[in-house]
Length: 101
Image 1 (cartoon, rainbow, N blue to C red):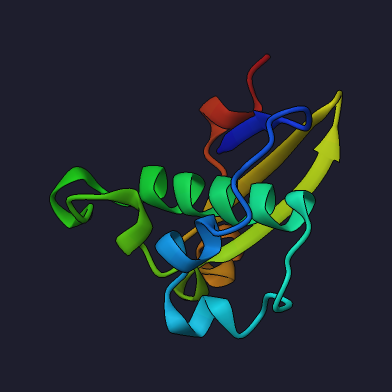
Image 2 (cartoon, helix red, strand yellow):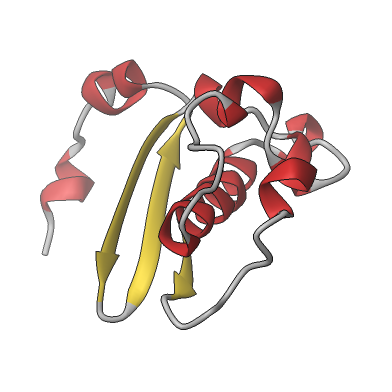
């Protein structure tokens, strides 16, 4: 999970520095600040979802297309949640401890 305040203004050219070619195809030629914040928080969330040995040296090297990412705006923040795949969420089994409390 990662979040950034909607008031944070990212440089317009940040997509050129952080978006991999497969991610760049999903952005317009002149992405809005909201789109840039969604990309940035998706990258951060995906990075955090990886086990430390699998994390690349820098966040921009994470390929967000390999993750199931949900991004939304709430409470004046852009929030992204990343999981390695949708099937991992579905296949997780609840234990009795999950139901406590």
